[in-house]
Amino acid sequence: MSEQALSVDPLWPRAGGWPALGEDGSDLTLLGIPTHATSLSPTGAHATPAAVREALRRYSAFVPGLDVEALRFADSGDVPEPDGAEGRERARAAVADAAGRSRLTVAVGGDNSLTVPAALGSAGDDLPTAGLITLDAHHDLRDGTSNGSPVRELLEAGLDGRRIVQIGIADFANSAAYARRAADYGITVIPRDALHGRQLDDIMAEALEIAGAAGGPVHVDLDVDVCDRSVAPGCPASIPGGLAAWELRRFARLAGASRLVRSIDIAEVDATADTPDGRTVRLAALLVLEAAAGLAAR
Image (tube, rainbow, N blue to C red; front, top):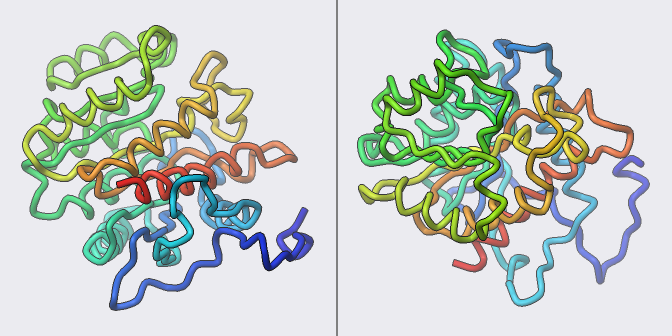
């Protein structure tokens, strides 16, 4: 169903279609960072920001009890060719500009390599005190430069591992070497199985306390492959037994609600590999709106 086929109802305004970021700033700014060139598996993730924008039109910004519709939304478009050293610098600068004029910046990828410029651009000079929370099935501590290395690259850029929390790390999706590397860096790991017996709100509160311990800004990486493959088939690395869609949506809202969180990224959705009903892209669009709902609750 194309955007042109969507119904028009003046009493049911649609989300998305937001204006460019103006000099007076915004509450939430959307930015596309369509990284894909260094992905460890073939991906069409560069097509995802446009697909998410189209999917946003399927939803409203109405949430009972929250004035989400009153937020000032902006869309800064896509960073051109964000892969490679020059592209990464363009992406970092675009995030820095948006973060400087917005209460919350939401960067939509692209593969997980976008987390590096998103976090660096948002933190700026505050990197020594900044924190990182990842919702991810993987540690992302690989050597080299790829969608499997963003956490390691941020550590090498100066992020303190003691203020990194990784939620949802999955069995059978990592290695002993990278688990040891996470421990050596002082990273707090909350594996997928640990989520079964705890409230999600409590887990996020713990993560925010750790990541924000130095008083710096927190970046949240929502790698959608943390979800169960049934709800995220458009993520090449998603596996059976991951998070439910509602769980990742809840984490997105809790992230948006925290005054510590300056930026969020949404990664690893390949719009070209999604199912015909577009369920993975639609989930990514709802993560944008959940972050907005959280922001409205601040």
